[in-house]
Each structure stands twice: as C-alpha cells, then as structure tokens.
Length: 401
Image (cartoon, rainbow, N blue to C red):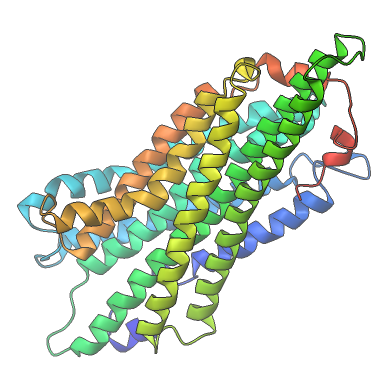
C-alpha cells in the first residue's frame, strides 16, 4: 500500500516470502515428525518433506529471478542512479547480474545430491543418517534463495526513481521498511541454518557413539580400565554440544518469529526506533548462540578426531560452518571495513554487496557438500550395522526433538 500511494508499485516481497518460508519450515518440521518417509507402510515418494521443500524452493526461485529481472530492466531503462551507476560499484553490479545463474546451479547441485541420499533411504540403508545428511545438503539452496530475495528487493529499491515532489519522509519510510525486510529474510534463513547445524551435531554424536559401541563389542562385553571414564566423558560432551546447537535453534526461531510478528501484526512500521533497539538485542543473542554452537561442535570434532577419522569430520564441519560464519559475521566485518575507509560504499550498496557475496558463498558451500556429504561413504553402512545400545537405536530416533 505504501508503494501504491507513491505511484511506484514494488512487486518484490509483495507475498512476504519471509513469512511464507517461516511457516513452511514449521509445517515441514511437523510433517517430518509425524510422517517421516513412510505413512502406514507406504513410501511417500513425492510427498516426503524433502521433496516438498525443494518444490517450494523451485517456486521461490522462479519468483525471485522474475523479481530480479524486473529490477534489472528498471536499472537499464531508468535514469542514472546515485546508488548503482558509479564506477566504483561496477564490479558489484556485474557480480549481481550473475547471481541468478549461480542460484540455478546451486539448486541443481543440491537436488541431484539429495536424490542420491533419497535412493539410500528407499533401500532402507542407514535411513536416519541419510535423512540428517539430506537436511544439511539442502542448506545452501535454502539460504541462497533467501539471499536472492533480499538482493532482488534492494536492487529494485536502488533502481527505483520517484516522481518530482514525492514526500521525502515517505521515501525514507520505504527505505527503512525494505532494510527491515532485508534483515527478516536472513533471520528466516538463519533458522534453517541453525537446524542444519543441530542435525550435523546430532549426526556426529551418533557416529561417535557407534564407534565406541563397536570398540567395546570387539572385547566381548568385557570392561577395561578407563572405559567408564570414557563413557562419562562422552555423555558430558554430548549433552553440552546438544545444548549449544539446540539453543541456537531456539534463538533463531524466536528471533525470526518476533520480527515477522512485528512487521505483519505489530507496530514496527510506526515505531522504527523501538524495533531497531529490540532487533539489536536479538542480533547479539544470535552472534553468541552461533558462536557457542560452532565452538561446541568444534570441541567434539577436535577431542574425538581419531575415533571420527572415517567420518571425515573436518571437511563436514567446514562445509556447515562456512555459511554460519558468513551469515552472522560477514555483515559486521563489511561495516567495520567501511568505517575504516577500506570500502567507499553507502549503506544500501553495502547491503547489496553482502547479499551478493552470500549467494556465491552458498555456491561454494554447495560445491563443498558434493565432496563432504557423499551418499556412498562407508561409515553409513557401519553406522547402520552398529550394536544397538540403549534407547538411542534408530527405530526410536525417528523424531528430531
């Protein structure tokens, strides 16, 4: 409505794609918990939660590429823009123009790799572990789509030209609203990112537990010196890591839900300063939670690296940590470089650069996942054949939380 009053309809985010994805992720979480991959013994080949997630991602991809195309045409045919048409920003514009092709490539990479894990699930080979790997493999696609959503919106904002005499206050209100939507989009993407990190931590603990169980089973059930200490150490470390990754998920759920509520039902648009103040608190909470989650996972990977050698934890850890690091720390680093004078960019140009870089970082992450998360690794088979110990058997762990 605000854009219509200014006679410059703004199609980007008209459907509030951040709200759509947030609700869709919650629905898919419930769907996975209740149905998983089979319903009453019938395989859900097309209605499993991963296929539905990729269907949604492809729809959003088409919408965002179309929105980006509209902004591109507006940029080429419109008047000279103070934000876009300066020589020092040309390299960023060229990188922006290539992002739709990078996004399509990311989607193809992640989908074809996901199909390899899905085939293993249909063969009932380490189903739970391939299921966890699937959610991690999909991370670059989900994050890249949301990064493209923010990029298309800001690109349209930068290329838009207002009629002479347009109220400057209304234009500033639109700019602030777009900036907040830009933040909200990444909050929703961070939610899925936190969930992927949680799945990675849980999978790592399962591999470690299986390795310990197999070592003890080779001794015929006989105890040896230090076995109780190792068991207690594993239990303590696993609880600490679970707490760190679970808290990261909780913070992201609350942060994204609060921001979406404020913009759709609250008073964020009318009380910008209060919204910014509260949002800053969530931002620092997210930094602390992400840092704690990454540190906890890194502690387990370092402390038990010998037992996890076949699992190649370092490569997998880097592939997951890559996006977590860039999503939470890159924006602050770019702002710091701007304050020091290394980047001569406006706030809008800095946000465009941040979104553009994240698309390419998602591409790098997707390429790394092809190497790190192969469906043919032998540890899947070893994990599926491990001695069942206690209530943590596969059958009892179909539920994520």
